[in-house]
Length: 94
Image (cartoon, rainbow, N blue to C red; front, side, top):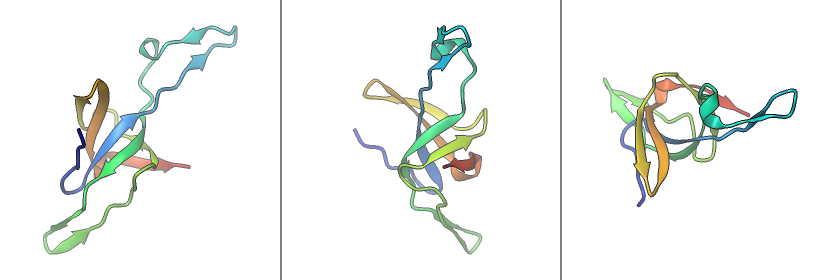
């Protein structure tokens, strides 16, 4: 199933990171705080609001930081995704 966000929404997939302690113990993703880093899967077309065109500043494949309580979690084909507004994206990670 393919999802195409509307307006200025962005479909994100969280980036799974494994963290290792100094003693070599690998921490599973559920034992630590969410990283709030994700990869952009799909981008909406943008929108016109109050007569101004709002262009999308992120593109498919970008890695981004997003707000802690942003978006709506969805599950498609056993994968977890997050749909957020463009303004909930804080930065592009290079």
